[in-house]
Length: 431
Image (tube, one colour):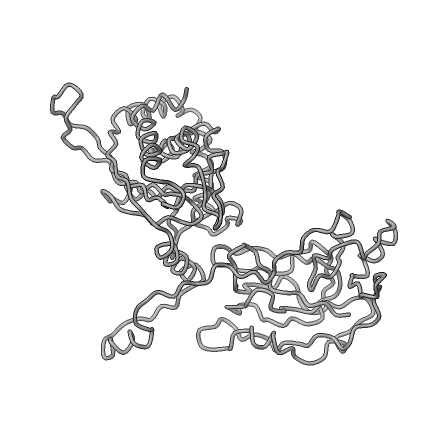
């Protein structure tokens, strides 16, 4: 029977996407693992692989179509011996999900095609329940002596495909296809029409929100409304760190390594999370998950939004390794080439606006993280030394935003103190 290819959920938070480009055309033969399309999510453009084999019988959604909901049929795959005549009329759900053509769309979606007429007889389990499997999966199962009734399908509508029979593992729990990502929070305030009426007669340019900006708006509104924030502030003297950094960079010059202050901050946070393990945790709804490794997320500004790539096991990596990894992640973030696993996860984040001359600011916790360190610029300031003498020092102001559900005030103070000690005594971080 014709198989619907559905709009995939390429990340846990994806609800809809843009079908940026088809890599196949109607009539092409595809196999499991072949690249068939490029899908643009709220964060990146990713390649989509076929999970079944067959011939592309009908493309239902034209490339360039925006706002295509996850699990919407985007194409129909025909099995051996089937033809386009088997497809039938347009399915209502595909029509409803496809965005209407308008001046803002790159291209109008193609007229959707229908699911096939009633399916031919398929293999059945002992209780008479139909088993849906691709012809290739059935052949491999027969060759390996596998009972298809004992397998769980990962293809569309639970269909058993090649990969399922090749691995031949025990049935896995089906993916929660219909589990929605966190619902977009609706900010309080006037509606779009009300705002537009306020500015009637004024000249302005209307800029449509792309997927990334919509996601940022929804997630951060939700975070600010639902996460009980509190804030801890400290000044950190950087003179010892700047001197130590200069010495290291001279020694590393032949290796092409140049450490930034941000590299030291990442390392300081990672080691502090190990020193105060109760703070290395995330909020999981009805429980707290205390993490073992220090997976530190770092905000990277890109055109139209931001990414927070995660440096895993940061406490175990050298400063030069962290520097190289951060540069690579930041470069690919700006090109929107990060895979979801590279910007999801982590227990704590860093947002550094010091390079833009910002003295201090308060950042919003990014759930499920327990905290985020907002880093300001280092500046020369008068300070009173340990001997009571007035001197000039390079001082950096930081603010740690904390989720009170995970970290209480005293625990947060311990974590911030550990960060300060690491940065003011940088050689300790190499011990």
